[in-house]
Image 1 (cartoon, rainbow, N blue to C red):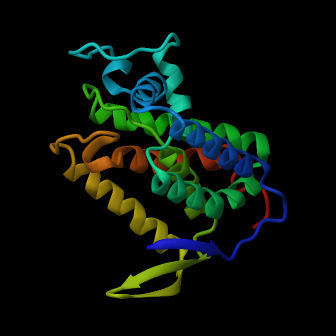
Image 2 (image 1 turned 60 degrees about the vertical axis):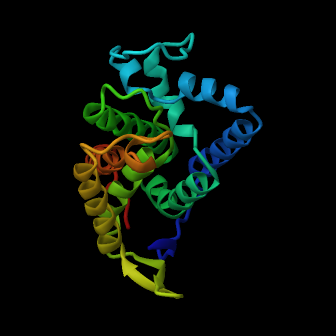
Image 3 (image 1 turned 90 degrees about the vertical axis):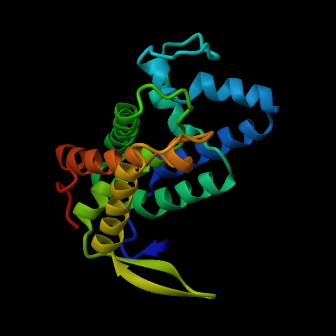
Length: 232
């Protein structure tokens, strides 16, 4: 299922959401300008490498001049391909504007970055010895989705739904769309605990625990930052 849009347009301009999308796109354009060797160095310098974060790497890896905790923030703006970038930015655009409208620009930025950090730490907790760089805005965006499902559970999400060789669109309540998405991430996270890691991200290219963790922390942090203080 792929979301196309929702029925809760905001009354304010989502400056932070648009700024985050621009920043992610610009950094990805920089990534694709690098050679393979340069890109590998770039990812090991700015993506989260769990074993470097816990100082347990068994083999020497490229390092950065900055403290490893910096990657908890920088990794949120890196992506491993056009589909990775496009999917994340689509979800951010659809669900982020409403949450930013509720929290306000400054608190939304704090919320977004905090969810990204906590999502990365969730993934690190389950793979602290991994030497595979973990990157992407998925964890932070999962946090946005966790807040969205609390604030707009009845909002209808226009969804692209493939049925065999055909594709149709349906309107699904956000509670069901995002609830199913979260359960899927948690299930795959459990299933991937003993799975071998692949290049790029954990367990087949997706950091499921970062998604599930970001979603939960978003649902917790959103109300604490005033998610329900403005009228729906």
